[in-house]
Length: 190
Image 1 (cartoon, rainbow, N blue to C red):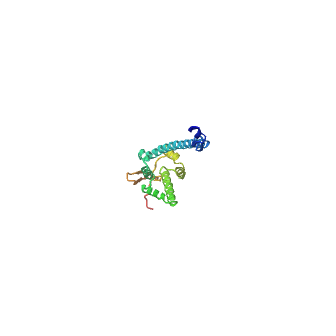
Image 2 (image 1 turned 120 degrees about the vertical axis):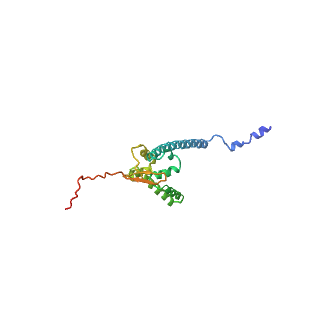
Image 3 (image 1 turned 90 degrees about the horizontal axis):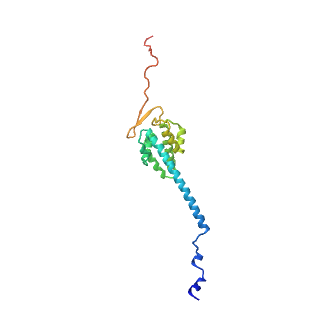
């Protein structure tokens, strides 16, 4: 009896530990492929939504008299958006409260609602636009940017405002006709 014949009667290492093809491996591979495809689709959809929102914000910035490229730069775009909304850019530091559980989150939500409301008023829109900017910002930035909505400034529909470089708002009232409605004045003393 030779060496090969003697050891061939014993089970192999690979008989106990089969690293070959198994149904569990096939299921895990299929699940991984499905999960990867799903995440890939989410990534593509997210990028498309981000590009659409960026285009809408670009138009909103240009309507407000700012350069459109400012919407691309992170954090700086929020500073400019607060300025367009007629708010102090220093309010952004309120977002740092977000690291505090619960209370910070409520503060951040309040700041976001306040900013959306101010932006809607800066374009002469009402509370419906505030809700839209809060829940569907991509769509409502596109509407503000590409519609005939005009920038009226600092949340006041009846006035027009321009922003100076330091964030100070210069509000100028629309000129009113100062001519009297009644052309004859009664100067007689009775």
